[in-house]
Length: 361
Image (tube, rainbow, N blue to C red; front, side, top):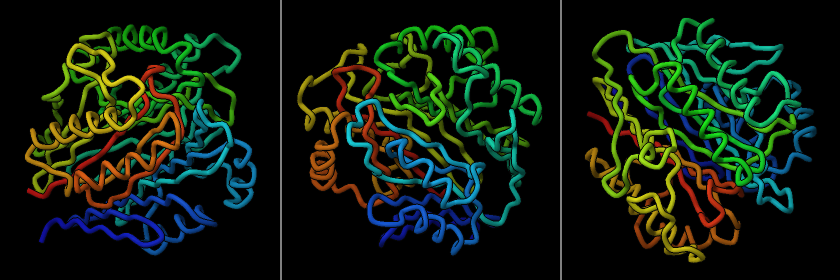
């Protein structure tokens, strides 16, 4: 057996892809006491190295978290959504590997990610990339983040066009998502992204403990040969986001000899013309969003059972119960899904979800 997928649910939700040389894991904790201790203990039990950890919580909890871990360089992306009023701690999610030896990457005195490799590719996973100065304008901070990412990748032997997935968190996103998009598009034009493949992406309103206007996570992949194919995947129910001047792909697929990994971008209740659908109706927005996700999955011969990892973003956490009811109706099995209280890229969008799916070949 060259590949196997397993999922477990108890105090944590864990999905594991076991390959011949190593294993990839997603660990999610949604509630309870000592969430971080539980997540880290699960990783240790798997003998896995955490590559990136999302924490969705109020920033007032950040100092106690750092005190608990004893290491400010722990690979954490700490996010408090614009819509978060109570500063509660909602969930944590970690991406980890076992059987490999990731090399830490440092930049500007911070641990900001890892480089690792398997038989098919080299990978660079960066987290929490900040602008060089938080006192610049929002647009200048955005340009600085992209320049920093390019410099880090260059230093590790990657090209900017090796990026296949980004996670972008903008403080007070609703105030400046348009200007951000302009900076991103101009940078992509200048660096050949549109001539290669536009990455899948999530763009969410969330503040960070550093007071920056933007922080970003990146996954870059450099295939070693043609056995690994990386391609853009279109959405059957939505037109490309490029049609309405938002520079990301609906999904990206990594096709290995043993399995396929489908990375679906942040998806919301948007019609083929780019318009918000079902304003002020959270249930209909959630149902349409999940229909769009299902359409992408089915276009690649997948279904709900192949879901491996996800994050759901709610403008109001009261909508979480609506999502759970819809998921039950759609018979979506339990999988590692983190939840966050955050603004989506439009004021009239109430819900967004990103998912990864894995299918053995």
